[in-house]
Image (tube, rainbow, N blue to C red; front, side, top):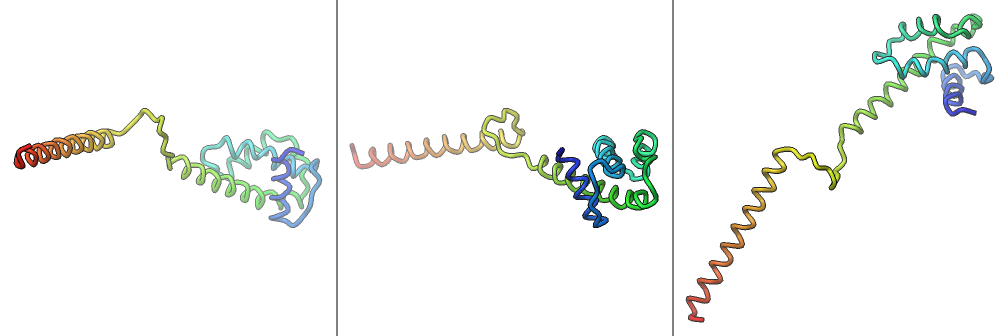
Length: 139
């Protein structure tokens, strides 16, 4: 069985405590809604419901009991997708450190140059300290 169908069945059970057959019209309508939820950018309940009414033939097969279940499960699917989208955005904003990343910010380049210059300065300072010490002791 398709994992999306199983998710729909689980969502229906979570909200309504009813176990439905995968061929039930409500399952097919909610399965159809998954693609709408993913394609819509605003995830507006009324827009998704209008699209379901317009484009999903199984919607006409829903009886009153199934129609009463639809809004609650659809709201849950939208909220679930929004939470997953937020997690994805949060994850994608946390850019992992990559040694092969060629794009660097100007601050990091400046900092590297500063550290390199500081290291060169310390080496020169140590060289002159050692040179002066050996000259002082007469070697």
